[in-house]
Image 1 (tube, rainbow, N blue to C red):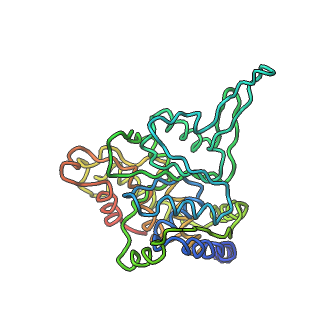
Image 2 (image 1 turned 30 degrees about the horizontal axis):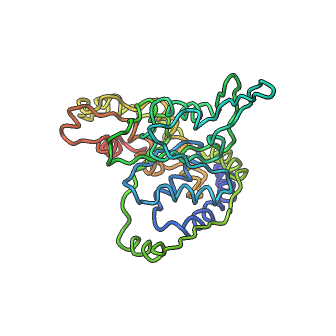
Image 3 (image 1 turned 45 degrees about the vertical axis):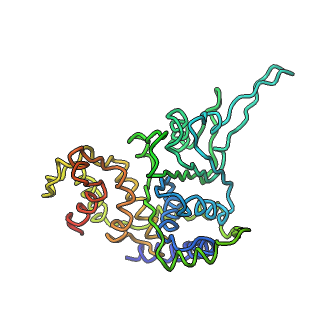
Length: 328
């Protein structure tokens, strides 16, 4: 138990900046605690995030404010159907004076990338972004360039308009550690938004309170967060229940076309550790897994046509699995 006590003390000491960062973001963003918490999980667990929600819910602004508060290099990319991979990663420029090519790096060379409306760009651009996400590197011509650390892609997509969009293939969506569904604010929050934002000259400024080096140091501590073997097995049971529900006495095989990939188990473990770290704890509880589980799994469980016809979503399925798989 002494080992857990030591890591607990270490987490308490290292996670102090979480509160400072949350407070700083809260000076601009009203409510959205769920979104801010999940953005921090992605940052600490080194995983990219896909954010879905109707326009006007402060998705873009939250990401921008987070980047300002961390004192990192931030780029916002508005994805459009005419975007080219070179607009994202950069290109080789010919210099007629000496007949040589020089590399002009693109906006992907930043710490936090906001890919706004990612489903508006064609497949070539999406795959260029995905190489950067997966490999943490970019190839321009014959040269390969490492991307800065931390490197985090936060992509947004609008669930309403589907005209002129290129839906992300399942294999691409699987690269995102978390998929968040952002909902409307409460009445009280909306009143506060109105009071804060209904001015013609909005100046949004946030003080940088955390350095990238702090994030990288905190990630090492996140790796040390203790996870009992029972909880590791619980995570595997949850993921396996999406692939073979019958083995867990769940009558839903006809509703699931594809279950979650092994990447889900890895990401659920990392995200649960980061979530425990944010709560200031050096160990993971089953509740941490439940709290973050929906965001890790909702985009990894593909439902059948039969489920779609009955209006059963992947969220319904994941919720049922969490309700019925025994908790250690």
